[in-house]
Image 1 (cartoon, rainbow, N blue to C red):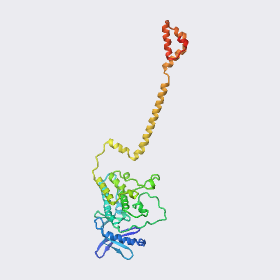
Image 2 (cartoon, helix red, strand yellow):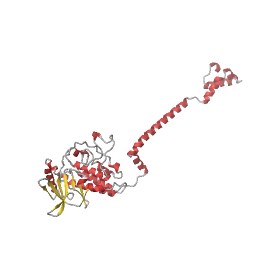
Image 3 (spheres, rainbow, N blue to C red):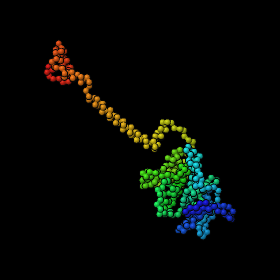
Image 4 (spheres, rainbow, N blue to C red):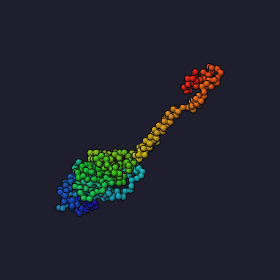
Length: 368
């Protein structure tokens, strides 16, 4: 049914009980790795002692002398990878039922890990190819007994990734698995189910790294803006590159998913009034990229117009009026004697001369 680098899952027949079973074993090459077969048997023994409806019980386990194996009860269904290939793209409009179904599926897988984690059993490679969906609607992990194998080194230089893989960064680095490694894998799975693809990485070379050259994915809110904030939080807090930034335990992740399910199940809020909707529209990243430069340019033009207007007003105030220019011209062109002789009365002549002096300083002989 499944054949991977270290694992094989078969659909087998229990001849004694005359029923179908799942048979999980290691690849022949994987058994050559030191103590991998022994760890498989120890994990199968531990798993057989865990009794919970969230886990498929281990019916039998052992070794045929060549490879270790574990036997689990069969359920009709299909692997999640097969179902995801047939899934339609995410709906353009909000579909509460679709979102809740996918959140519930990831929650079921997390509940299986909630039983195995305290026993020290962390899943070695959590991805859709290893998750089985029964016709009863439940999700099962068939290969929890398989231990983590050291990463296979390759001499071929890998191309830069365009999306996050299901394996956590620490697992790719060859470090020991932890509960937070499974939390990361479930975060990638939840993103994949809701967005229709794994978390994509930014294309720009200048935008792909944060501090310490840690890659960051494009947020789910950019791909599915119709979901609730609780769903975005459940995904984001599972996908941090640093282990200590993610949810501390699988229980914390389950609690966050439950909050997301409750938020997605709530009736849609009433439409916002225009005066509240406008600020939200203006705060969108694409709008801000255009709006902020436009606002800066507007204020620069406004300052330039104010400066030019003030300069024109100062020049206008400093320029003499046409009446003053005309009176000065008349006074300068008239002889002083004729100006005063034009009047019969000396008093009138003196007053006229004094009025002329108020506009411009006149020669002393004219005043006298």
